[in-house]
Image (cartoon, rainbow, N blue to C red; front, side, top):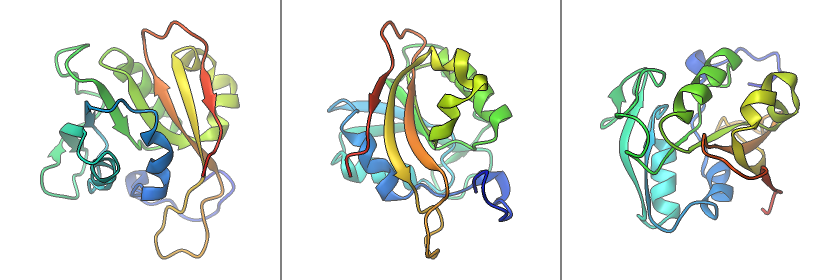
Length: 179
């Protein structure tokens, strides 16, 4: 699933988010919040957040271009807007890592709400990230993730949660791996 792999990628980059990848994010979320999940797949990330926040994090809307579970609506994440800024506290998702999609996604969601995204850590060190990193207020290290449940090994890329916010007015905060 990464740049150092010759494995065929899963269609639409659908790699369900494992619980271990969500744990580092929880301490960076408010005690009570609502959010949307526009790349929800099978809803696993939503279930993990609910479990880890003991229900204090409420998903108001979940969608995917090809939903894989009941309660997830079919929508393109790049066309949702919820009426603009301020409607929801935040967006939390594990988006496809395709750079064309990812960059468009970040630019689109900046205008809607603060957005937490889970993807590879190397991205922040590339030239292509320079403009978008100016909107990144937090980076939370996750490390390597075991994306395929029955696999014997983890992915080859380290991952982070990135918080993008159009109204960022401070330097990016980096949080190293704690677990």
